[in-house]
Length: 357
Ligand SMILES: C[S@@+](CC[C@H](N)C(=O)[O-])C[C@H]1O[C@@H](n2cnc3c(N)ncnc32)[C@H](O)[C@@H]1O
Ligand SMILES: O=c1cc(-c2ccc(O)cc2)oc2c(O)c(O)ccc12
Image (cartoon, rainbow, N blue to C red; front, top):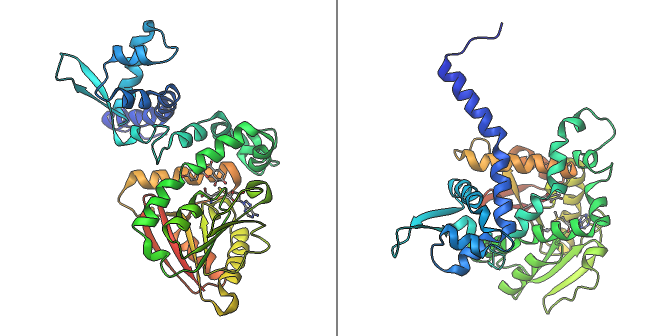
């Protein structure tokens, strides 16, 4: 027989289930305000904006929908995206931005708008809806395939220009924030290097920032031919087409940002072995710099661990990748022949890991 809990515990359990089940209402409300351009509208207004002013400024939204806009805004105020404050000059209240909604403004230098729109696109969310079906299916390698007619994430990306563009924009939007932190607060990681290869560096946003902040470093972006073909370099930045499983050009340091979380352990060890060859050629004793998540479930901050676990589920469903804890990272480094490593948790939920041969 199921144990009868005290009624206060049952009510708490019910509230917990409701809150978890409706978590997606928060995500979809953020998607909606981002699509409607509400952060930009309030920013442009320059002072707290009343509901009437907001509704009038929303393109294509009829005044008859004002109360629906108010209820949408009440939810995103509650989740910390806006504040509703008293306007001095009148009796009304107006909406203002918070640090989170400022990052949803399209032309903010560290805008996360593209990230929000790409991650909440049905292309990305549908695999999670299909997770149960995927667990009981023996054919598909990932839930992404179950949701997308058997096609892998990378196949879809190749065939679907809309999704490809959305995803690339979302990924690129992550870089300015990382570039800002590493070129200001983590300069010691790059000081003294003469050369660096950004492996899987995409179109080179991060390598460009490193090349500008450290003019003495000769930077190379290595990525697959379709990604880097035709991109012009600069004095100390060049693009090379190649396969990281085959060969990485010799260099003082190899940078891997959001690369190893895409792959299973076996492939990560192969990539790391190629990195080790690159940084130890010509009697070098360089290093590999990894920017990725180190899952820390002992952390006091419940919210950041939860976000790390969300990323792990995302990588599992999208590409059969994973987020790793410190022990799992250490095993990869040992298996690839490295002797030591240092983890600096300097990038919010991400860390910088320096790995030495
Ligand atoms: C998740 S993205 C990360 C991009 C970039 N480092 C960033 O943080 O925005 C993974 C990158 O790895 C590249 N990639 C995948 N397989 C590769 C391979 N075999 N050799 C080189 N690059 C590869 C992809 O083209 C893509 O640009
Ligand atoms: O779906 C994703 C999302 C990411 C991602 C998003 C935002 C960040 O700040 C970092 C990473 O990365 C992915 C990835 O590397 C991949 O290979 C497939 C899917 C995703």
